[in-house]
Length: 470
Ligand code: DHB
View 1 (cartoon, rainbow, N blue to C red):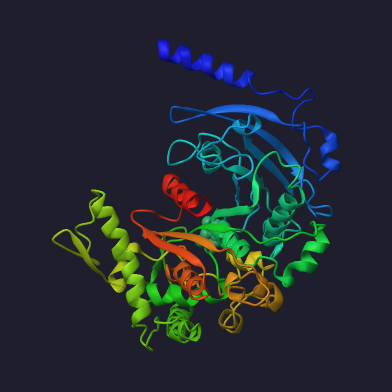
View 2 (spheres, helix red, strand yellow; view 1 turned 90 degrees about the vertical axis):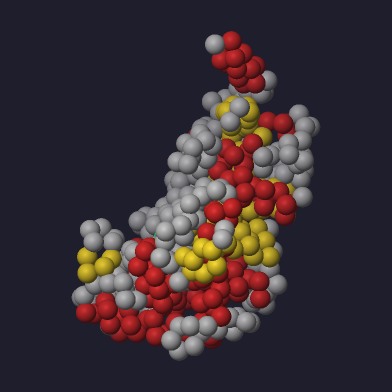
């Protein structure tokens, strides 16, 4: 009782210590005419992270594109830890050195609203925005267009994320804190794909016309690091590795469990057979596949599952009793990808992304069009159409890694759940190998017991971010 009273008292004190704007903070209509950081329109908030009070100032709903086709949508929020207004430091960072964390809320290639700090993490405790503030990071959270908005199809999402980065750079001197050379992206699933795209494509000229069209600032849009969870990326090549893993598992579980029809099974066989040529064509040094899909790349993928299981075992979790995993004397020694697929079960019918009926999320993202030759040629849609090649190109981070004139982020952390069947683990793994081969620091791992999800390991994520930022 006494501690509760004390805590309430401290919260009131903390709230009072923050200098308050005289206007209704954050929501004045004149802000809508301005893309510039409004100095006095902030709200003060204090929240608990565990037993620690975290105070910060929030600037809400700032437009970041001068000619956005969805001006009510293209807004961002800025959150700055209160300490930075008093010359104090947090976690070794100061107002000048604090990294700028930019999470995106895109999922299913749908529009994503600005993240808001709260204790609403479905894994318990603070969400990634509040947690970042507690670790001394400045947060800039943009809303981003997605496929269900009239003007939200590909490549709107990456145009917006880049425009938000450019807004940050343009307002460098007006932001109360934050190091614009330490911008970090974060997202999961389609948002993970978006995080990879932002990280991979810094300053690539291909986006310039789109950025001009929405009225983005003329600034650099490269970033320092990307946090990527279960990215639904490399879309035009993702159907092949899905079948490389799930071929032969014919029941799919998107909605009620159903059997793949003959067209789908034929697609599964063809796409599985096509994967080795694609993989070998990437020329990832030391990673190849023979025509049956066996070889060092397969060993690598199985090894990622082995490492995930070993880490869980070392942490006291039970990994025993699975027919696809060999554990001997406290050591996980092997994973069998064929048996893994049966255990994990298939989520999507073949082709997993470019659906034969042209009705997947990804088809919709490309304007209800196909984006692979296989699905286009074998389409069952009434009026099959192919997406614009240039749009497919600018939606794939793989096209920009190692490309001249592109400033790819130096640091990457890529995570994919062991129970995730939304895309093949090969997709994030290939991304990581390509990054490493091009000289970037890419930390990739599968995570035990985790389904299609992200931001579940905030302590580890921020330990990694601290290590690269300090
Ligand atoms: C997402 C999941 C999918 O399975 C997919 O195909 C696209 C996006 C998502 O959760 O964002």
